[in-house]
Image (cartoon, rainbow, N blue to C red):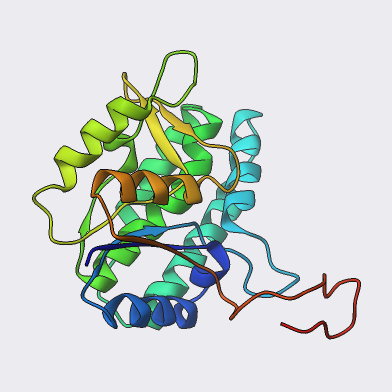
Length: 224
């Protein structure tokens, strides 16, 4: 049995949520390939990391100060790392991001860093190999997804790996420029990985058990 598991942003929003995801992965040896989203909201008043990155890059693009916001994003990850109790640092990664933001590398690159960084943390936490989605997911020059080239690259990359973490939401053009899927694209990445490794099961995890028969924002206490 071989499984690919994808975790949404709210499932990885904090160290406590990360631990739950890790427990799910470790509970079955068949869960060998993990696709993480960027950290989501920790509470209703919180902001998703991807939205913070969009805002941060917009400031950089318009030559406005973004240092405080980039530091706030880093603090989110540092909080997760500290809570997990792992000896790991993203300092060098944030230095690269800072340089690339100053060079106005592109909004897709900025948006993709949430998944990229969460993938690094997840691979360190689980002890799985990290595979940068930019190396194995291809887009054509017109921005359309190259399914067959991607399947070839992904299959070859993962063939020799017992387990791996592949960040969701993004890939790259042939020249290396990062390109994102539309919002929610980590679900697509999960299915891409599942196809490439010929998984028996693709599990798409969220942070709630089951789903409700009505929108709880409209109907009080709907049944699951």
